[in-house]
Length: 116
Image (tube, rainbow, N blue to C red):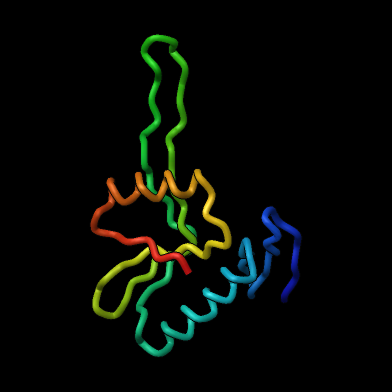
C-alpha cells in the first residue's frame, strides 16, 4: 500500500508496507537499506532511534519542570563489520537540527550522523 500526505517544508509523507515515512527521500533510503541488508552489507536497521541530549530536570529557582531534549534520527544502521551509524534524510538543515547535531556529537562521540 502506498499513499502520500503533505508535510512541512514540502516533504510528502510516504507509506512503504505498513511503515509511514516523513518524506519520499526517507522511504527511498529505507528501501536501499533493506537491499543492503539482503546483500549482507548491513545487519540491522532500526527506525527512529532516540537519543537523550539533555536530561529532564526541575529548575531550582522557579520549580519549573523542563522536559528532556532529545535527538531522533531516521535510522540506526549496523554494518556487517559492527560499525553503527545514524542516518538522517535531511532536505533542510534547520537551526534546531544543527544545534542538536552538535550536542549529539559531544555526548555520543562513538557514533556519527550521516546526512543522506
